[in-house]
Amino acid sequence: MSTASILKDTSIAFLESYLNNASPTGYESEGQKLWMNYLKPYVDTFITDTYGTAVGVINPDAPFKVVIEGHADEISWYVNYITDDGLLYVIRNGGSDHQIAPSKRVHIHTRKGIVKGVFGWPAIHTRLRDKEESPKISNIFIDLGCETKEQVEAMGVHVGCVITYPDEFMILNENKFVCRAIDNRMGGFMIAEVARLLHENKQKLPFGLYIVNSVQEEIGLRGAEMIAHTIKPNVAIVTDVCHDTTTPMIDKKVEGDLKMGKGPVIAYAPAVQNKLRDLIVATAEENKIPFQRHATSRATGTDTDAFAYSNGGVASALISLPLRYMHTTVEMVHREDVENVIQLIYESLLKIENNETFSYFN
Image (spheres, rainbow, N blue to C red):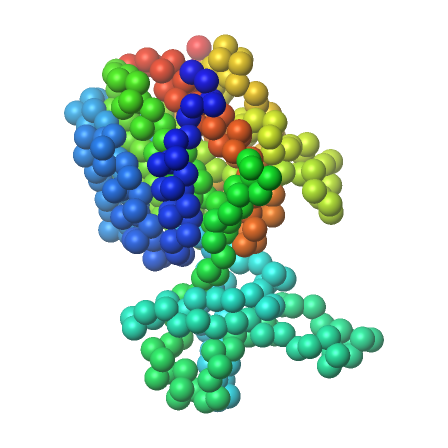
């Protein structure tokens, strides 16, 4: 299957709407509705859980269960304190980067709807050069244009309101996708495209396939942890992002040598089951899909860990998408990598056999 034909115009249109929609950790429901609506023609049924993880299922009655998974949430902020002068101080919801916050526009999500604001920052003329402060959690603040705490509260803003960035999808140089929340709604997009390809190519799988879009990954893999116990899969192939290490100020001796445009990244880690990883590597080689390798040490830091160590142990593997500028509003990936991750997951599924045993000792 040629990667040139993988992404349709309708695929890109869905990707744009899906990325542009806010889906902060703990508040993923609107994004999940978009995702399920896109996936609906390609699956037999859906599973959802109390916290919002969504699962499209093909062959739900099959005893052998295979998961392909991404996560739906994006980093954000919470309103933590409102001053008498109507300014907001914040705490993280996920790994939000305080250094990019000053001068960014924000959306505060309230029961009354979106309230717009900005992260303020003192003008360069007013800062003492010999004592210049860097942005940090304790000094970044949001300005809604209000003059009092009462004005803020009248707009429906209160402690606990979640805050997101409104930066939207764009394409650079024809083949670079840029947006906030590519980590990891791109994963949800890619597994949905795998389901579409299986449907359009009329592939009949000998097992149950569970297309899982988990919530709350950014605060500790929580959605995957919950849904793994619900599904009780035999195999899990997880997709997430990893760092393109070719940009300035990244040490390759620490982070590895990975570059967007050079293909999917196959992980090596204790949570990655050796036989399943070997199947994926062999699949890439047989189908001439370019790939890279990454050693992640004791933990992958992805939902792979949650699936691998659930239910007495689940054969799990991680296929990552190289990404620049993680946890910023200009996360960037290469279109060819997106297509190749989709193809690699698709072809790997076709190599997994019903009731296959990924035994450590075989």
